[in-house]
Image 1 (cartoon, rainbow, N blue to C red):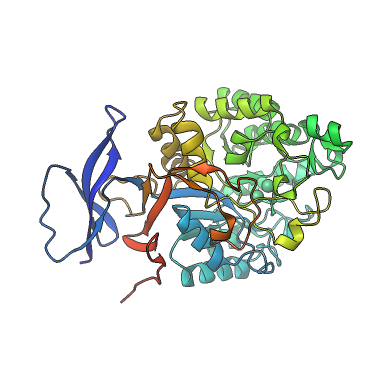
Image 2 (tube, rainbow, N blue to C red):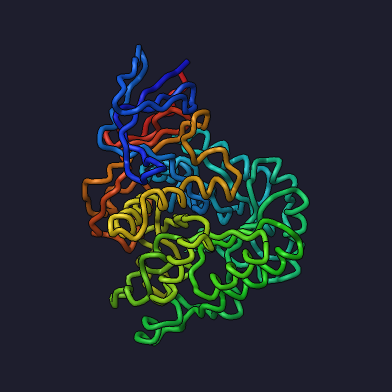
Length: 439
Ligand code: DOR
Ligand code: ZN
Ligand code: ZN
């Protein structure tokens, strides 16, 4: 029996919302026992981890990430992506299928799972594509992909343009009890723009992506979810219009859930620097301050269920092509928790418990995972977090290959210091990434 004691850490008392000192015992990869901080546990010969002053959180869960392998290893690999996730405090991540080849066969699903198994130990849950090669023409073999280990279907990176195709996908997914996860974007309204239709586009004479390009798909798909009964999950919500529709869908009992990214909670198009730095280019784009406030409110009232990063690494060369030609996307793992903790919890707008639930127990609930909680008997997926010390975001220190972030230089606190998956330390501030210790 492998036993580890995490000593003198802090947890949130559900009654008061305040942090209290606790000791936590892990046995054989599971949470075994909580003791009051005043107790002196008999640790015997067990491994001990000193968590003095650190928060003991359930491992963070990120249900929307891009690991780029196979095919785009110059941007990221499953090894570097999972290392970056571990450093950001994430113990479970769900990766998107817009790789090369696209994850649209059981073989590619298995390849991702095999590479993940050999990597640092963060749990990787693969999504498979809705349509072959994400071209929107032919459905993939949902049943075979499910059997291979896919956890849901999505053409993330592009929207499914044809309504009948989406309805067929939802009908099929429902028949095998799988969710449809949708990147909502109507191509006929997008016209090759790089930023949203708003103040920044106007000022620089750029074409803009209108808010309706997202909301039209959200509305269409909620109707199709109502018709088919499928669990429909909306990716990276960024507009007030989408939120109105999701709220309506939920109010009439449609099985719709939704996610939002830290950048859509923290930045608007008015923050984009005039230098046109492409590290501010992502899809969906940064919208108006009014949309940002709507996203925050929707997360707070439960219209939006969870926070995801949409971690989307690109090379420096690709991002140097300028706002109009660079690819969409920013990295997210290593800044997500400190950003949200500093800007929403330290400022008093959210409780720590609220932020944690949107990054742990809520994603677990939405996707039916057995992680995201530290009740006795749960998998011992744990993140220790230093809530006090302040540090600047420095892309040079990232474990992801991507340096593409708009948050460089932001002074943040809430940095993870140690990440445990199934009772094993996978990353610590002192030791970095550890090999998975099977002995
Ligand atoms: O910003 C984005 N990056 N949005 C997407 O939809 C795709 C992603 C990527 O793959 O780079
Ligand atoms: Zn997307
Ligand atoms: Zn994405």
